[in-house]
Image (cartoon, rainbow, N blue to C red; front, side, top):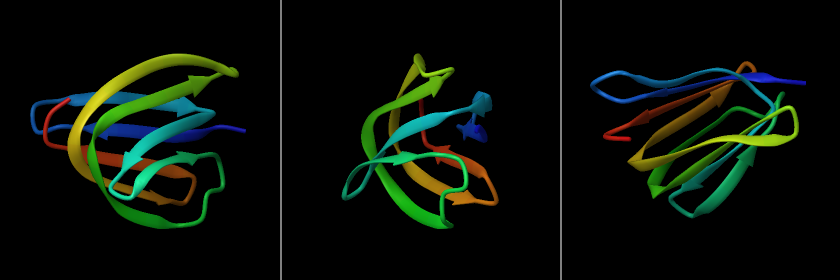
Length: 82
């Protein structure tokens, strides 16, 4: 099962699409998000976000902090720069 991921910086939408898994650098440590994740809101630290689709690592993005919101089978990341 997949879910929607959006990574948005002030200049542009860095990533938008349906994925299977993402691993995000949370302020208290990395965490994974799968489809149907419980609602969650957290601050992010500088680190790499890993994006998986079709059971394969398809993309990585370096985030410089920000906020992640997970709800309704959608993950939205607002970041300062990417």
